[in-house]
Image: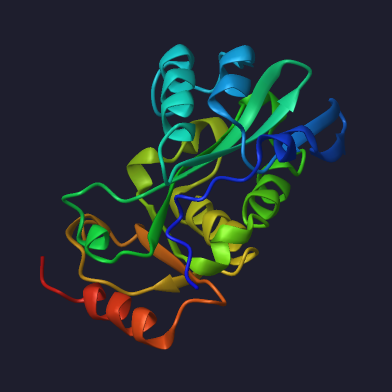
Amino acid sequence: MLMTGQEKQPPEQEAVPDLLATPRGEVELFTAASPAMLARLTMDERLANFRPAKKQKEALVSIAGLPEGRVSVARHGDVIVAYVTFHRPHRLSRWARHPLTLEVGGIEVSPAWRRCGIAGRLLRTAFAHPSVEERIVYTTEYYWHWDLRGNRLGLWEYREVMIRLFAAVGMEKTETDERDIAAHQANVLMVRYGKNVPESQKKAFRDLLFSGS
């Protein structure tokens, strides 16, 4: 039976982190952080690529509380140093027309913790959640959200880094005529079909790729 994504993992599973040793110290990675856990933690002030860190923490707490929302985090002590978010698409998005879609809403690593292997490890931890195999998970990578200056990379270099990062968890670059993706050649849609998603549902999603809207 297909899960709708509304089934939450038992809270006690949040207390069993994946551990990663880095040059800056040990980091704990959680597949699904609860709103209560996130509220207790402090946000690294440099996690401000999308919005100021305080506002971003509020957004994480909100997403973790959604019926189909999930937040995976990496923390050092009581400080969040990286996160990945998952949620249903915006209701006006073409991808919202499909009942099994789940969007990677954002991934961010504090500048002080980059090049420590956190992004790839956190994604693998996040995609280990059992609900992933019941869903069509996608990410819309827009160049205007990329921290090119902070990473000291050119546009196309950064694009390749992002493609490799998501490809490592089974996501594939996918062509589409979706307006924002088509707005610039650097933008990219990446998609992963869960192992338990029926072929009919995969086809229904592919039918949305070129819908002209």
